[in-house]
Length: 221
Length: 221
DNA sequence: GGCGTACTAAGTCAAGCGACTGACTTAACG
DNA sequence: CGTTAAGTCAGTCGCTTGACTTAGTACGCC
Image (cartoon, rainbow over all chains, first blue to last red; front, side, top):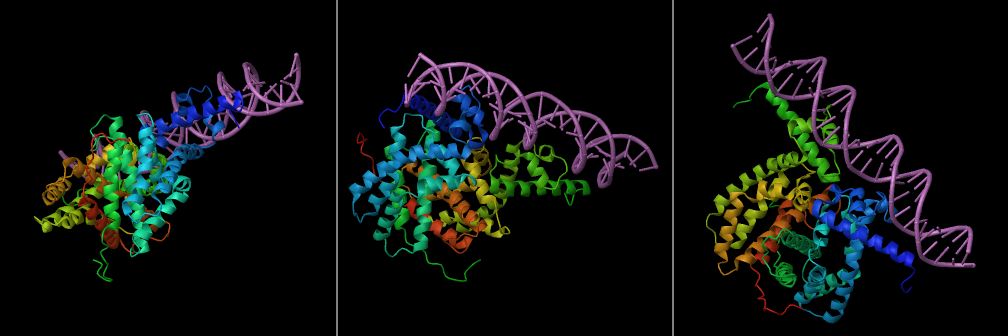
């Protein structure tokens, strides 16, 4: 499996061209507001069915875009997780959740589109399952959940699940908002992705260790 | 302005029919995956252009749906805000942010669709501006921001803005996720909207009062 | 060196879209 | 009572969509 053939290289290049064109258009105009034709055109393909040929349906294309990025993020996270080891500091685990994402966005050449793409896919009733399969079911995220549970053994399991979901929402949509602001040359609360991650980690750590107000049964208004 | 004319009542009823049908379809299938024709049909209108007649474009329809709900939420919030008065407890202000939303969702007859609808609109590049105009620019939200700033005078303005956005993301998407789980008969971390609000408030209060890690300039990796 | 295969190009197709039109019904008003 | 206009209905228009078909091209393999 060296450089394969010239053939496969060209095909792979076309695939990549479609992937990046789709990512940009999806982020800027919305996944469902962009047709496969427009993607093919933007990727410089004469054939209006290029997307169909290389990927299949639009859902498959979305999955491919997600997979491309999450693979890199996962690798980063695994490396960071190995360093963290068996920490008992909540902040270390939360950092493993946040920093690989912001680091990936920082590494991509600005402007980026992936965060906005993710935010859209995560909220779409037809597509969010794809994102869940593609990224959330990763072993490293489970490992982080376990690490956090070890840090906070007295936290009820339900509240833990609730806060994990909150952390996910926070990361995805805060990054998307920052990315959008960058794309529009609007001011951002933080100067860099690194600083934005610090702000996210501050918030998520506090959220995770927050005291749990117990519900008195039968006080429903 | 009593009952107006019979004519206007019928027209208003049709409008309402379209509004609720659209809200349901948008939440379940996605705003852009549903055509105006399908909305008209679902609303029991023979004319495929009923939406166009009563509302105009799809964006106008989205705005009307948002306005219908935010009006009620705003009224609730204003009432709650009057009670809170000049509190110096962060929790009181956060409650004013959260409880009117969850209360509104609880008051609607289950199943509800508004939370999922909001989450989609807020993440769509073409529609989120509508939602911002329609709800975020409300005077009561500004008032809450001011109240929180008075509680936390030493919090940098940038971080305050950042955390306000985070609170918004948390409320919208946590409610949407709970609503989706309810619609699918999936388990939810909390038994009721009231309890879910308590969990949200716990998290948002902690996030807002979290210590701010100061950024050392030039430590970018 | 020629054949087969993987890829791209170009064009076609029915279906569905938003927008528009004109006819019909009926409340509203002088 | 007769006119007016708001609201509904049924149908048409041009256009775009995803899916499909066919033709062309050039690499890889033997």
